[in-house]
Length: 169
Image 1: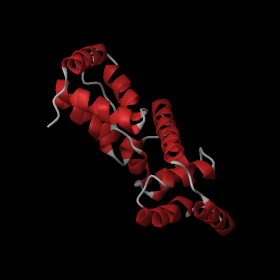
Image 2: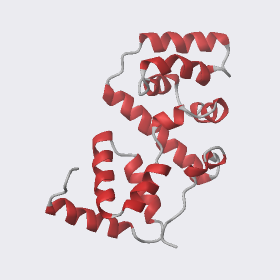
Image 3: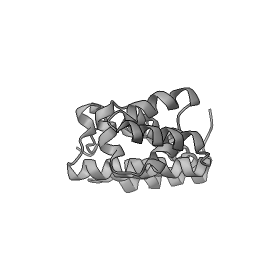
Image 4: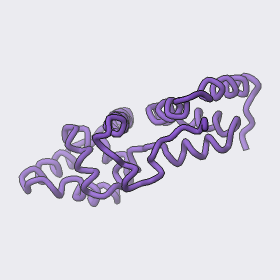
């Protein structure tokens, strides 16, 4: 088990203290969700060292592109309609290769056969970098939370753990 050094402990304590206010949990969740993978893992370690309960709550409620891509076709189509096919093709590369084709079929099932063919060709031709894949995933996560915040999309209806409430009460 990794032990945090003194500087990390101090950062940890000051980090969580900053978020122990009304609306703080949502802010911390947003910070973790919208961080690149390495920073996200470090933040989760720091939170875990300070407060196991908060770390568990963040992990449960945290959106990842893999979680979004695992949703049923209808909510996935709702989110997909907000982005170009280029973004979705890049997001699919976050999945293991064996899951890409079935997910592509799920994502495009409401499209015309010509559109499905076009997206499949784009997928076959794509060679996104890991940075492009991560950036596309973060765009999708931000959009899901934006739509959730405005009430235009309610992921908690099909995944109750995605309901966001503060832990300050």
